[in-house]
Length: 396
Ligand code: NI
Image (cartoon, rainbow, N blue to C red; front, side):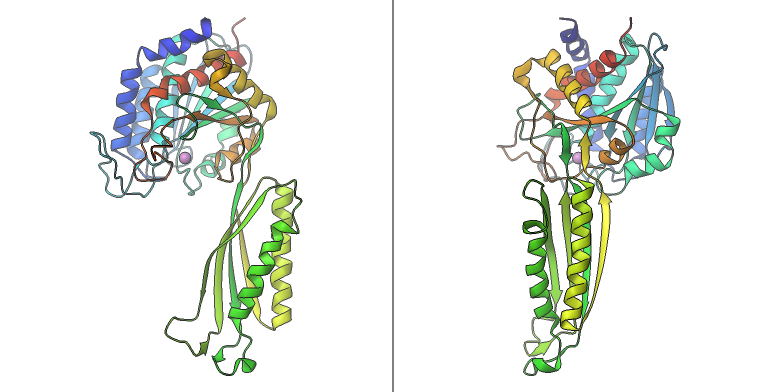
């Protein structure tokens, strides 16, 4: 009964949270440009009595609040992302994006609002013994917002015992909480390859070391990085996303070079390192075989998102207490997508969980122009955040 009343308390100001969410939706900002959004967050937190620290990771900010007591010495971090995507919104509502070509197509407007809902409940009740650090992160969409906050001393200035973050998930029914213990999302790396050989006349291939033939061998060899170099019990993806060589009208010309780009997704540092190593060996070997120059640039971008198993079980327990077991998926399957909250999870134990949106069957999918966050689930997300804090640091 007690836990249920948290959702009920937050539902009392659900309408205000919906207004905030729609206001943020109407004014989306790209990574590291979230000045209006962070102003809005800072104003709300200040009014609620938080100590607000701006400029943590450029446009990021952190709000700190003590509970009714602060004797536990503990601090729980809760994180939301604030940035939008360079997409032209096609959905029509009274709060459609007012910034041409920019939209909240990943629901970060909803994430920010759910954390503001938790901020208000926590400030009004302070039913915990310790501190909370509310982390409003900029630039999650591939621009390095988490790293920027860490570089600005996030965990030195605001040491946390555990951190939690949430992402909406269209394929789960609305309001259902999904948790994936252990590796939950993949590391996302990218690579660029440049093959430099000898071009020439299409009728005299023997005078060349045809880079297009080398591309053919390279594509075939790269297919073995997963199928023959990675254990069947591990997961990995190697995708060649672009191949560029020659020109369409030059039908009797063998080009002198070729470029390829692609992505690698893995769930562990070991598998990632093995694929990187084999990619180097394959390209070096092919260069020797065909007497060409092959350069490989491998970029480690985002590590795998690995949920601490104890923290994951704790999220499931909190969600079950709030919503009943029928509304919790404690063993959600991992995905090959990526998320830079992973960098924070490398510094501090925690869990990244999902909140169902419903609507996937109606085409309301992440990173699409018709996406819209489901306002009905805001109190659920806020309440899970609040109970994670209250149960981690109970008032004795
Ligand atoms: Ni997102």
